[in-house]
Length: 525
Image 1 (cartoon, rainbow, N blue to C red):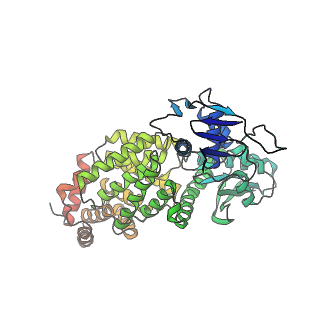
Image 2: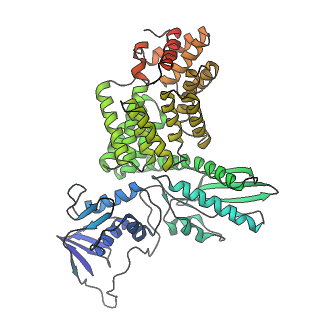
Image 3: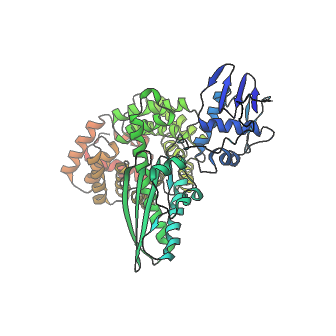
């Protein structure tokens, strides 16, 4: 049976969408999504219905589902504003509302005319348009059958934690556990589950100690991306599971991002999609220099042009403007502040369930005139959505610095460091720790942390300020003078009178501490 609407024909048997005589090229999951909506046009299809039918119940991110819906609409000449054929029913789902005619398709002799279920793959599953991973059952090497429950529990917790990352496509536990007890080829697993990355590992117990090893593999090539081991004691089995989950997920997340960035760099420019552009923007963003940020910002804008609902791209665009502000790089401050605020608000509006968008947008809003307590609430929500997101912890720490809660801020940033000890944003965490110690009156610790950050990224103006102010307040006049010389080269126009607008600090005593330190170090009024 063929489905006809307007001048389109969808043929399930041939897996073909046509407009007149023209064949429209669409991806397999976009085809399956359109087919499901047509077959079930008499009712509203919920999000769960679509996930079950098109992705076999696997966990996919909100942005992945949205991008597929946008692709379906684009393929049939519809859009999210007009909704001529595919209508969004608020908080319910989608429904195909166009007039549809069912036609008998012409089949070759001997072929069954019965439509097949397009959601059941007949070969290797296509890779999603986002990073994809399956966590396989860990091997129990202890010889103790009772440890099976522990090994399985660790993997289940890791799968659940990875699933909180909305930028990541994670295969559900029930599918990945079909490989339990089998010797597998990760390339075959990747093809069968439709994922690019596979996480596998083992558990070994000796007396009261347990060792977990894990490795992340690119299933398309068999290349090992990351491997590590984690040791603990079985005094509290659930606490140990939690510790291992946090350690593994914290280590795997940045490795996945790095691998995806390198993959995006290798793609021909003409083949880049919105997510590839976002990844290329992230590669420049992590460098942190003025030139790199100037290259990152247009890439995030291009990603938004490809996908106007890409919440994280708005958030990262906003954060580029924040980074320009905090380093004194803005050339048209009112216009850039307004654009940063616009992008940040768009990020949090679109990304109510996107931890990355809430983190970047919520933090940037705090620097572009947003209410501090409300912004902290956005980052707290991000941590509810993804408790293992290091950026949400450390930027939540910065927001608490602004609110005058220095010890709580240090605790947040320390948690981020523990979650992601090799994070490309470690320099920002170090500077934040130094700033919190400075405002708490611990000048030796402040200068130590500030110098770590400044040594890694010399162009980081905040780190230079922390070093200069902490040395001056500790009475180290010569060191403060050298630090101020460097600071004045970074931003010759910075003045004590500008500090209130440069760095939002709610408590007057915190503003006084920073101003006094920089004044003593030689910053002009």
